[in-house]
Image (tube, helix red, strand yellow):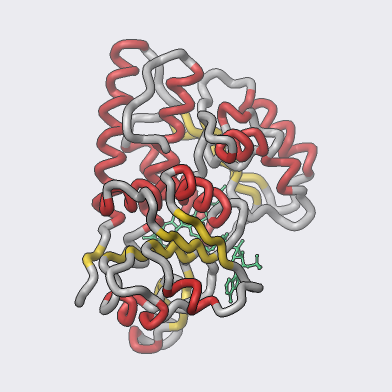
Length: 300
Ligand SMILES: NC(=O)C1=CN([C@@H]2O[C@H](COP(=O)(O)OP(=O)(O)OC[C@H]3O[C@@H](n4cnc5c(N)ncnc54)[C@H](OP(=O)(O)O)[C@@H]3O)[C@@H](O)[C@H]2O)C=CC1
Ligand SMILES: Nc1nc(=O)c2c([nH]1)NC[C@@H]1CN(c3ccc(C(=O)N[C@@H](CCC(=O)O)C(=O)O)cc3)C=[N+]21
């Protein structure tokens, strides 16, 4: 058996088209342009790439993009003052503070200072609580993108056994909430899980969000399972030339693709969907802020 490849790039393009069409409509009918502010503290090269890519795609769907780049040694007070300004700016509907932050800044404090209505990452404690209790919230982009691809591929997820490997606040935990919301039987695995291969072998849906290159081999995968690979790991690629690198996921793609029913690739899987969902969340936040009808199919 050979798995169907779930094309995250194509999925993301469809989401962006929906967003762009709705943005055009509210601009024409309501004279409102959704705006996304991205705050980057420090000069981590990978973060700079993501921030640039987010800014470009924000403009492409017709929204306003505001980028704020702060020095790595920026004080907490300065960052909080910027967030306060953005919270009170009616042109800004979504605020994203790129993580991780430099060590001297308190991440929880910073995230919880964002207006929950503008928290397009869905990381604010209010949004976490709303999601956990099944109420309307802003849903974290990466898990939302994974959910959209799972629904797109499987239709109903009801009653399926799902295993999420990883329990971070930004991926693993909200992913588990969303799967539970779609009536999966959910197991959350982590570094202390006993017999991880056995746990994974029971799953109809495997979401790997660990950050360890190719750690999930094909022989852990139940035949026909749907595999979503969130991991983004840069490894050496001497075959491409000296000093070259390439991106791989947390799943060993070649062996898993022989057993799975469907699988997302890295790159071109979850990553592009994350950014598309960020744009979708910004549009949703803008509609909610202005009492406009929300676009369908872009939230959980
Ligand atoms: N495609 C995208 O858009 C995004 C991709 N990512 C990628 O996803 C991956 C995970 O990110 P993130 O959630 O932030 O990572 P974290 O480092 O915050 O969390 C990793 C999780 O994996 C668990 N873990 C570590 N080692 C093992 C192991 N040997 N067996 C089982 N579980 C293990 C940890 O367990 P414990 O809690 O016990 O320590 C932890 O819960 C990374 O590669 C990251 O780059 C992240 C965000 C977005
Ligand atoms: N506040 C905050 N919100 C985030 O959502 C957030 C964050 N901080 N910090 C970092 C992680 C990581 N992340 C990615 C987004 C897109 C790709 C992506 O588009 N990846 C491409 C490849 C890009 C490349 O070639 O480097 C792909 O998988 O095809 C990857 C990773 C969002 N994150």
